[in-house]
Image (tube, rainbow, N blue to C red; front, top):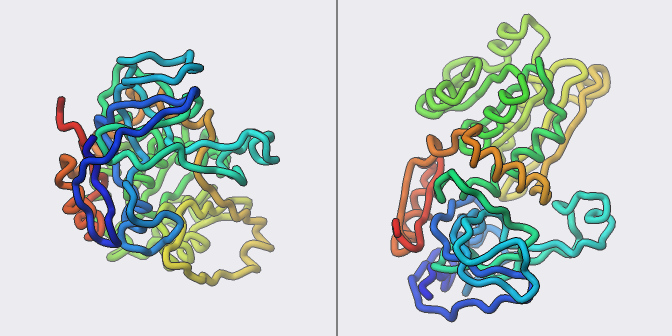
Length: 338
């Protein structure tokens, strides 16, 4: 099969590689769409080293089952599927508690999914019926967003400020809206704020021209936000997030900072106002199932987030566009439109 292979840092080549073998509880699927994630760029650029060349990138995939292992009962060839290509142990204290996202023994089933075919453990995949492959390729990041919203305990009537109007921030906005929250989105790019408006943001703030703290104070009658979700790994954005939260509120540090960054905030704000600091990482199997369903039922508009599309041979260019910051979401289609 053909795959976009990272042969060395910052070098992608389309090559023929062996089709992966599957275990008894695994499936092989034809990758019809794979979204690019900031982590793909970090691996490509050598900013993180937990995955090294030669390797294939990609983990936000949807496709068609072509083979199933001998103990697979839930899937058959021809099923349309989306999910996650890594697996968890099931026996560490986190897995036992239902928090597989924090599994101490997580590992990938195979290589990445920017390839004509990929493998996955059956329990981390879900079937869908109505959505397109491009839409269902958002299953993995949307599942992470669902975990973030849950950790923030967003509820009806909350005033939720989302800092960062990339794909993650805009999905947070939509999920918060589904729960009946009032959303305010902050970014520095007008085109992204226009998209946020289209996707249901109650208010938008361009922080390059408007003081976001003063504006949030005005919009909330001085109460500030009940929940702040910092959906961008930027120290300044995180520090701003602490200035936006009100008493008894929470600040969710959803995005990692690469390279590692230090931030400063007033601890008395946390102390006197009983502000909670929340982290969010990855997702659970339940989050994946919910994400697959929300997309399949058309309750989350992910299609509007796609700004760039490439075939397998265009993967190198796709990563350069990702680096430029011009894209909201990039889709790679390893098997074209067929």
